[in-house]
Amino acid sequence: MTIGTIVKRAGRGAAFAAAVTAGLAMTAPQPARAVSPGAAIGIGLGSFALGSALGSAAAAPYYNPYYYPYYAPPPAYYPPPAAYYPPARSCWDPYYRRYYAC
Image (cartoon, rainbow, N blue to C red):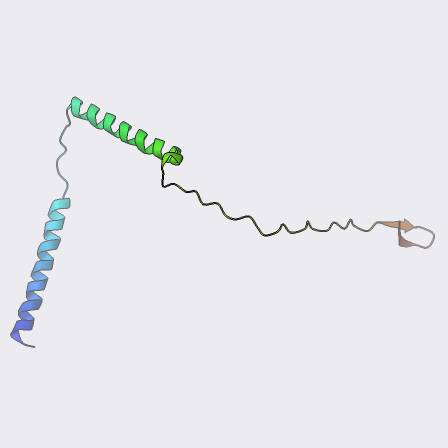
């Protein structure tokens, strides 16, 4: 291998290690900071307004001019209902000791 290839690989490894270290440093746990009551109320009202807007848009999509519902086409024909064959009845003849059709 040439020295240039070795230097490139070492540079890539160092860049990868630096990226992993930076990523871990950014995701490390931070101490909690309190939010003022006014900011908390603002966050709550904003999330309520956003949820209401998204919920009403999803509940009434017909106001959207680009909304076109897709309905599956009906079948070409309806198959006939299944035939009903009642079970055959049989009665016992004690004289001949056999079953016969009633």
